[in-house]
Amino acid sequence: MEVMDGRCRMRRVFVHLAFLWFYWGDEHDERVSCLRLPAAADRIESAARAGWREGEQGELGIDLTKVFDPHRS
Image (cartoon, rainbow, N blue to C red):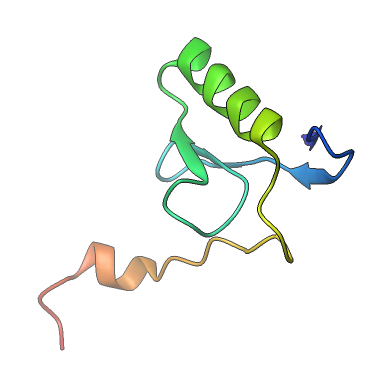
């Protein structure tokens, strides 16, 4: 979904189904669990009110091979 911050800048909020996150960037504070929807909505609203960080919206890139088989070198 697209969410506008207090400075009228749009950012897309995505759902990462494998990890059950809503995320809007690649930083650790730019994601929240989908498991508690009211708390997630509050966190997204709070982030939008504070304003999205400057610069391009980062994409969440996770190497799932490292998650699925951490002992393989």
